Length: 260
Image 1 (cartoon, rainbow, N blue to C red):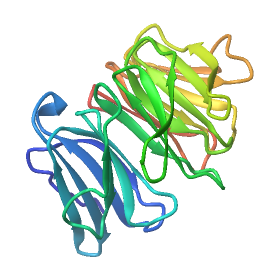
Image 2: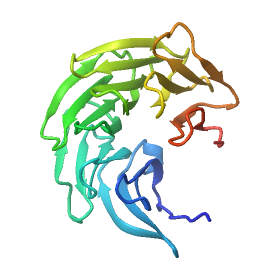
Image 3: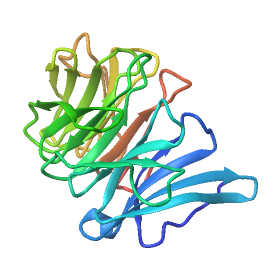
């Protein structure tokens, strides 16, 4: 059964399932395709009768990404077009718990660590930097530079503590070591902008990238001279790639060509 919730006058940019409540999702949205206007954060529950609104919060600029806390079922962080990150609590309908604005341009990606013993966030921005934060968003713990273009995607490794991948408009996929505060690998992944990346849930060495060149590339980090596989089929830029959490050889991609 397919159910629908309409985010009136808001275009969806990201949707994330709660790690605590299987039937709950958060959605980050923006007006006018994120070019101008405001944004809203929605938290929704799938029920037997349809989709129920748990809460919605307006923001003065577009919201481009959202991530759930891995430690508190009520807490989530959204990424804003005004360069901010906002820490929200679904039990508080009034305002975010905290707002930080260290990025100089739009924040396009935010992710919460999933590895045991860590509780960190990473954000990626159009200002070409990635920032690592503690769970309270009190201030950034470090700023990582190296990309020569917009950072569209930042995602923690589900296997390796203190390690995340980033995808950029400079055509590269980079692997970062937070403990060392350094980039460990810079892979010229595509001849065009890379809009998305994701780690395989079953193999710590496998990462996929999706690009404006209409292809998905699968990389083995032990040998990055060429992609393990290049998947063709889309006719326009690939916006997001995601590995299946249940099968190691299955991934999904969605594109601006209106196909999945």
